[in-house]
Image 1 (tube, rainbow, N blue to C red):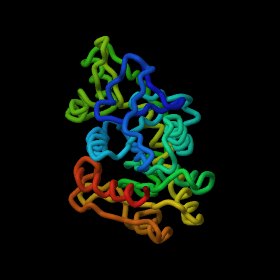
Image 2: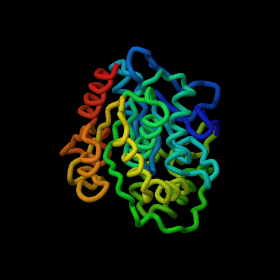
Image 3: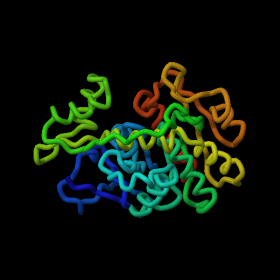
Length: 300
């Protein structure tokens, strides 16, 4: 399978069908990169890929807003790399390197969903401390900075090959890690895709999931990044977008919850989407896109 990489570890897409692998790795997955408007860079969450942004990419481009979606290392079409190097900072620097490799003009607007929200916090820290002109705004979608301690315990990494000879083989391999046949079936044709040679590719990677849980979601990196933002004179906007009470995975109360983050960084703009589930960009798509376009317009 040919991987199109914008940096060593990150695959990119900027249009609705870009989650499908291209047979020629020299063909760039780019379109609508306009200097007049900041580019929206979209980062997915756990057990996901750039495919989750398909509708968002299409909506933004229909409105002539430049946009870019990324596969984090070990997800989608991006290789995993050295497992000993997997960290919040490594993922964040992958994002910066990938965007720079595409020739995207600074500053850009970064949106991180769920686990990608933790990565977005780290990118924002890097921008605040090393490159203040990097970002125009950062949006953390349905994620707090609370360490998920239940995922911190060490354990053997699962073995998983993302390429399979048949759909049945791919499903069987995924079901060995995800005891939810309906969920696995929902990935067919989206995050589980047939390749031109008849093989099947899984954007979902239990090995990368385990690393992300241990080194990103169970860590205090998000809180440390937020403290760095609170200590800086930020030249970019910071937004916390939270799904409704029945769908959010974010915690409002307690240390590193949404209320605490807002108190530590009063400039952060908090918005709740009361009827949205965890993926606000898919369940409240029109409002999500409208709000994102408003940020871009304000920052242009």
